[in-house]
Amino acid sequence: MMEKKITLSDVEKVARLARLGISPKDKENFERQLNNILLYMEKLDELDTGDCEPLAHVLPLKNVLREDRVREGLGQDEALKNAPEKKDGFFIVPPVIK
Amino acid sequence: MENMNYETVIGLEVHVQLKTRTKIFCGCPVGWGGEPNTRVCPVCLGLPGVLPVLNRKVLELAVRAGLALNCEVSGFSKFDRKNYFYPDLPKAYQISQYDNPLSGPGWIDIQTEGGKKRIGITRAHLEEDAGKLVHFEKEGYSGVDYNRTGIPLLEIVSDPDFRFPREAYEYLKTIRTVMRYIEVSDCDMEKGSFRCDANVSLRPTGEKELGVKVEIKNMNSFKAVERALAYEVKRQGELLAVGRPVVQETRLYNADLQKTFSMRSKEETHDYRYFPDPDLVPVILEKEWVEEIRSSLPELPGPRSERFREQYGLPEYDAGVLTAERPLADYFEAAAAHTSNYKALSNWVMVELLGKLNDSDSTVEESPISPEQLAGLLSLIEKGAISGKIGKQVFAEMFAGGKDPEVIVEEKGLLQISDEGELDKIVEQVISENPGSVADFRGGKEKAIGFLVGQVMKITQGKANPGLVNQLLRRKLT
Ligand SMILES: [Zn+2]
Image (cartoon, each protein chain N blue to C red):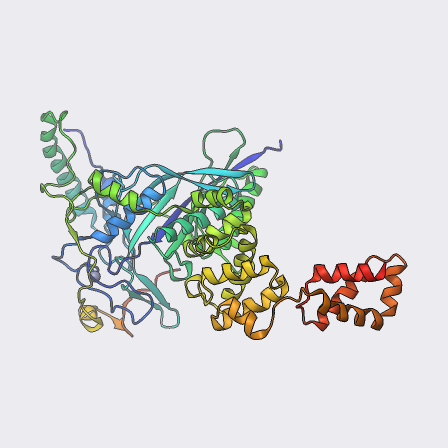
């Protein structure tokens, strides 16, 4: 058996960070799948990247800027159109403890 | 238990709102107040399929700020996503800068009781603001307003260089002054364009390693920062004194109770999983552009204050007050070009002008008295044409009507009476009307002459030359 990169508790942590509830069966599934993905990615270690600068972006672009000019937005009605709940112009969400 | 001495270690994180027309990554206008969710678009609402594009003005202002903070302004910089779930964050991540901030290490000097102190700046990076939450307690839910989402912020992180809460206070004042000078931000705490969080820890004196750090939030004024820090230092000191541990946590300051309280709701340690934002390309600053911005920076308050002390021979206090805001310093210098009595000018500006401006709730730029007019008033006093006391009266007239001091003096007949013949009569009158005081003075009561001079001034409505009156009285009474 190959060395495990991801344990069950890692899966649980990632699920918690992503606010996902997953069943015990899925946990094992994901553990196996995530391990497989990482193992597959290890293939990249075969490349010698000693001379390469870390890449921040895949596109050969830099300094894409816009002028500080106002552009018409959505307006309140349009902005709230998809909101499951709204009131007095606000998006309504479960109470946030302050 | 052995009585240990502890040293306070404070670091500050300041969020400064950059003065732009539009948000950092979209064309929504930046504003304050108003109806909720009226300054929003698909980009700042985080709707699918949109692309943020960096505002050129944001970059320029951030570079200005970095240079003014003596930072290394990085040639290469990029944006990262800081991931966390909170309803005020529509994308579930905040665009910020992680390992390649725009500005690297720098410093700023502050004034402390022990003189000048240099505070290190760790970094200054760009990020977008989050939305605003409104709590409807009765109804049992919260509302979100995304108008603020995407407003450009510069987060300035200091080194943990403060040893006293007072130093933190001075630092905040300095940062605000500098940011206003270079016209990068309004730094208005009430409108949220200037915010501050602090990290506080205590360590045994002489120890290198930092103690357990507590983060303090919710400090809404400079005074509140100083008080919150003082409270926190005391709280931690008391824990350590009885051998109890300080817990690493975030605490909120309650200004009414003047205490900090643990923010228990967020117990879980943060795991922001920063990664480069694939929607935004790197920023690579060209040296020439950075130098162009550097050369466009005005003289900064620190150096300007020092120059005021040297060039105008002003005390440290005066120089500090006069250079705290750029328009005031400009005003002083414009007036100073027309007079050589700099200390007197400084007094008039600091006491009379600032007092009147304060009372009328107006700014230096709105002053009805021009710098030239104020210098004119000073020269009237210097020449002896009017007394200092009358000067104040003329000043009030100038402030109310914007007229030249010479005109007011002329119209109101306020010229100082320095004519001996004219004063002689009045002096005689005062002597005959106040035999008691005359006797007192002749009997050796030096103070009595003050009263007699005062009587002459009263009769002449302050116009008599007090020095001359004094001379005349002495001549007649001895
Ligand atoms: Zn927008």
